[in-house]
Amino acid sequence: MTTGADVRDILELTGGENDGPISKKDLINSDKKKSKKSTETLTFKRPEGMHREVYALLYSDKKDAPPLLPSDTTQGYRTVKAKLGCKKVRPWKWMPFTNPARRDGAIFHHWRRAAEEGKDYPFARFNKTVQVPVYSEQEYQLHLHDDGWTKAETDHLFDLCKRFDLRFIVVHDRYDHQQYRKRSVEDLKERYYGICGKLTKVRAATGAEPKIYIFDAGHERRRKEQLEKLFNRTPEQVAEEEYLVQELRKIENRKKEREKKAQDLQKLIKAADTTTELRRAEKRVSKKKLPQKREAEKLAVPETAGIKFPDFKSAGVTLRSQRMKLPGSVAQKKIKAIEQILVEQGVDLNPMPTEEIVQMFNELRSDLVLLYELKQAHSNCEYEQQMLRPLTPSWADDIKVEAKEQIIDVVGAPLTPNSVSLLSFL
Image (cartoon, rainbow, N blue to C red):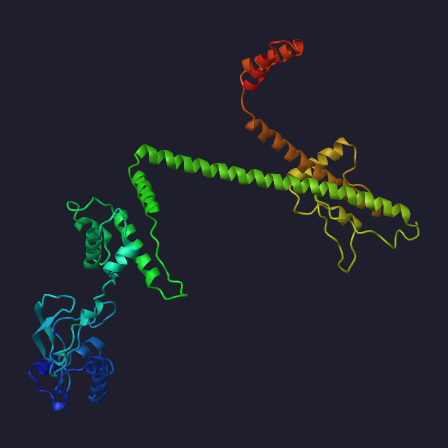
């Protein structure tokens, strides 16, 4: 809604400070000037007991009248409008101009600021052209001669490359196939880049190694053939390819699982071997030592692969029976398997916790866990072996048995090669 300030701006009733053309600084600093003017005007305090909305409807000579309709003055995410004052705008002029990219002398007209009259066309800097090499008659006869190309056809190719800035699709479209041989895009590229490479090599200074661009036409043709085959696939072929990709991923995942299981199995076997070797070494050392020094020089308990019991090295009173308690890392299945084996062998589940019994009991349970893991790995390997074994019909087994009987009965007979070939066939 228009206010009194807008009316005064339209009628140019303000002072002479606003004379002159509008500049960029005036547009940017318009908010600051308005804030200064607003601070200079006298402000009236709202009387006590009067609501803000009622006080906003009051009118005075030194204050703008309230708008008749509500207006949204918040900018927020809205587009900021141009802040125009009462100064004179910069004049614009309808003037002619020429484009340096054109060589026909065409003259165009457009609106432009009067201060920019006589300046160059601003978009002329985007006029970039490709430098196409030029060769002489002597250079062509000495270095560029080709039995498949004539000089007239080569000149026609380079003329089109210069006119269309090496856009070879357009060059191929404008190529004169009636006067010259029918060429593909790869043939045109191969001829052009071959000549550019030869000219660069010939014109290079002695001792310098110029950078030569090589175009592989055969690779480009194969690439386009593959793309064409890929584009011409039927929906059935696409679905089959997706199915094969999924199956390949499944095979790779199963292969990784088998490799991981094999590594775990190798770790278990190596742990079992190291455990037995450490036990034997410990027994040999214990036999050589004197009985008086046995308590003073105790061997450290080797780390077994089955169960790793914690060491109670903290200060304070501890019970030896706590060393027999299984750690929380042992699964419930393994605990039940250990208890079942101990019951079957007639071993007490809670023996007297002497020093020697505690050590031997922990080693026994560790070996039982290792045995349990080896049995599981062995059963898994047998299951995978049965799944990977090819299914052969019963009649094939009968033929194999008969063939073996024939080989045993008629060793050295004339029909022996036939039986051997039958076995190789099976």
